[in-house]
Image (cartoon, rainbow, N blue to C red; front, side):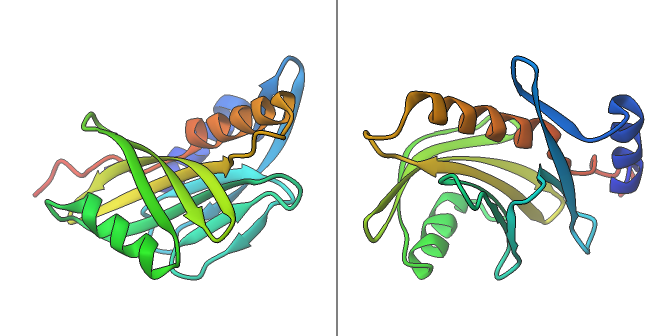
Length: 171
């Protein structure tokens, strides 16, 4: 079985250092959060704020952009479990679509108070658990399109560099 340490070392050898090209010749330095139970590696921009209450959340201190990783028990009705979890946190989640390919992809809108956020979540099956990478940013018609495109490039880089170990082939 490939473990996260091996995946991380391979990534570092491949890239030399963790940088994500986010547009043209711009690059953003990345740092890593390693799950203490070796279920995932989350690479995110240096300088982002990190919270580990009830999952792992990283957010930009300057932009309305975030990434969050939650681990749920594998259940046939994961969508309802996710919606309940969001509601407990005071967030209303409206799922616009859910695609069932691996990893499963959920797209929707979140609302918390006066904030509206676009959400893309990716579900990775890992044994009896599901690791869910959620990526989002603020929805605001007065925001610059240039800023939104920059945020989208950063979120794509976070997703590209997200790692979950391959399932073990031994029972």
